[in-house]
Length: 350
Image (cartoon, rainbow, N blue to C red; front, side):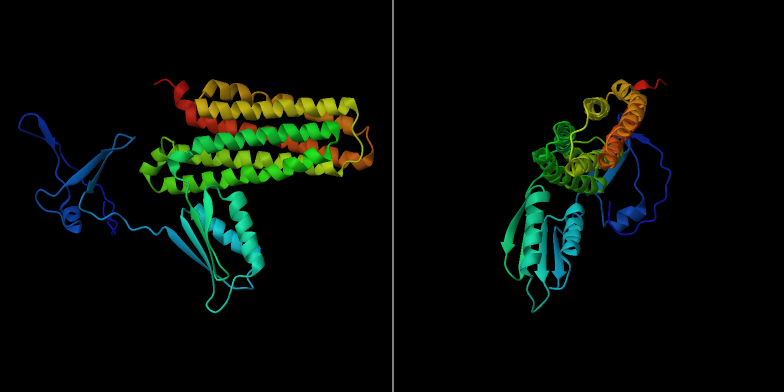
């Protein structure tokens, strides 16, 4: 359809039968005129997932889209603000990002180093193409088929699961080195999070792109966006556990560690099952997973009771760790509810 402003009203049409076997329907004259069509003009008709048909003139030029973004920067601009601008341009789908100093100025060495480190560590499929005092240009080289949304989300979930298990192991052993490793791994989760958000934002604007990124429809885009956010928050809580482990000076007693470990095992099991239910589109598996929320609440009470018996210096950190484990279970339940919404048709009979 044309990109010019068209009043969106429905016009009734009757299906005609011509020649005994061919069905035809007339098109609105206003649309014909606006698109400058004439007799024997070529049209493209596409069957959509909802059963509707879309009609487009083959002679219409494709909508011009800009794939390059130009970000003007002054030497006084804060590095964090510069990163936020770059992230915004990346997320909305620009493939080439030109970060340029204002006329007569240069990018500061700190601005360049912060932006280069950010691009290398957090922007999936992005390479630095130009690096001069006046300009830093980033180009996104990764295309949809090379890394689908599902593949990126699966990798993101695997890393998050590993982070959570490692951070509980660091608590059990009071291993500060392992806790620091968990915190460093969070960048990997953030990389995939931003990549998925970028793909979903672009897909919402095009039904064709939805297919290219490996999803079925716009509802899947919304569901995957919410799931991705919950996975990212789950990783954040693994980092919070690691941060509190670093504050602890003495190893906890075996009984307390057992309660926290048992609670954690259920929480991360819920998380893993919720993600697998999403990929398998399994309503029943999602329903089974969400039932375990009750077990988490019971174990949380036992773990908190155990925290009263340890030194006050360790108690505050332990309670925050327990809270993060509970939040992990809650995010798993959130993911499960999204899966239920996406797959409810499988258990509904007409």
